[in-house]
Amino acid sequence: MLQYLMILLDDTCTSYCHYNNEKQGKKLISLEDLKAGIKFGMLENLMIQYVYPSHELPAEYDEVLESIDHSKIMPSDNPKVAKADVVVFNDYKFMDGFAFIEGVSYVLRICKKDLFEHKDLVADVVEKVTKLNVVITDVETFTDDEFNTYKDVLESWCDKLEQLYADGKSPLLNLLTDRLQLDNMNNCGAGDSNITLAPDGKFYVCPAFYQADSEIVLGKTFNVGSLADGVSIKSSPLYKLDRAPLCRICDAYQCRRCVWLNRKKTFEVNTPSHEQCVVAHLERNASRQLLEKVRKHGIFLPNREIKEINYLDPFDVREEY
Image (cartoon, rainbow, N blue to C red; front, side, top):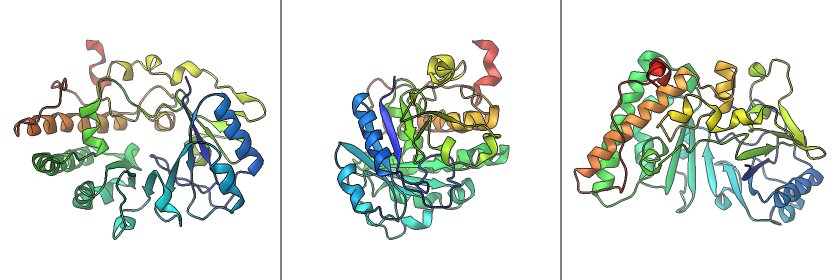
């Protein structure tokens, strides 16, 4: 059941997930389509989230944008970033000297190489913000050696977060602390709980299918309807968790279960890649370590248990289920 409507305000809107926005030229959503999108959201009782570009929008858009309750997702270099609910850093360098605001969520999009080299920066920023979400932009290219490096990075963050908990703080880093707060899968929900309206006036299951590299499109059109005709997602049950055989029995609850990455790597929206599964389980296992560490300090998170497992990719032990 749809709950959220993402409205891309321009072709060059920031990505806030794994994909890179490959579109170059500015193309604002028309005021007519913006108004129609807001009306669609109201009629469907959807929560609206606007996704902004780096450049400032024309003044005549402001009144329309503010005509309904919404959340703003902005890149860190947008001139009005102080008004954002979610701030996206598309380069770790943009975090240097940034004036972090309490109550705002921050997203760091970073490639694995930069992440490995600047893991201490991430640990430092966690202290300064309400929540930091780290999104790896090339997760599909992980190698076995890089999995081991990522495991070490997560363990180093565990040590940092353990100290913050011991000091009476409540750090929030999605890759480690989300799993401590969840009892079931809390994934992206593209095509199931949320839908995207693009500047071309058409709907997409998520922004990636409009903005990302065309290598997974293969000449096909991935829109799932228009403002004129409404939303019509072919094989819509495949976007639901109960139609994902591996994911529905998995307890790496923090995994984004990215349907765009699924489609890119396996050609199926409900089947995750090996890389996505292993990364998610490394995070899940590190969360288990963090849970054990904070309990040594007398900090108990109620009803939270993460059992020990002997695999990183559920596909490897599929015969056990």
